[in-house]
Length: 184
Image (cartoon, rainbow, N blue to C red; front, side, top):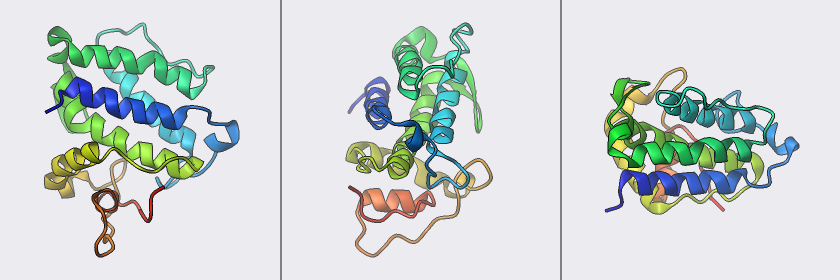
């Protein structure tokens, strides 16, 4: 079984791939997140990453003058390193459901949130909508028991019924209120 650090590196690889080569027009495209553009989605993910990193490195600040890919490349490796080291992995960090050790917050919330936003970003920008099947299975199994706790403003919308015979990615996205059809 892969470690949290390995899984986080894998989800970051997927997010990075969706950021690579985005144009300013694509950044203004709407996402499946109501009222959000692609840039809003990116800013959301980066805001979470910087917030966690700033618990140990307050001088690392987001620089909006950089491209989204450059901004991501500044913070993602730092957060990956924090997850991978015993001393920092246990630092308490405020999360959406209260304080958690850094590694647990990344494992239980950040991985899944970033994964679904990979898809949101791909839909908005015409990118590859396929998600890593292992990450989808893991995220779905962790999120399904929290069902009603995931719904509400600033969280996920109501579930959508998945089409009969839908693959796991479509079931996962529909569970999170995403109108997932065929993915490319």
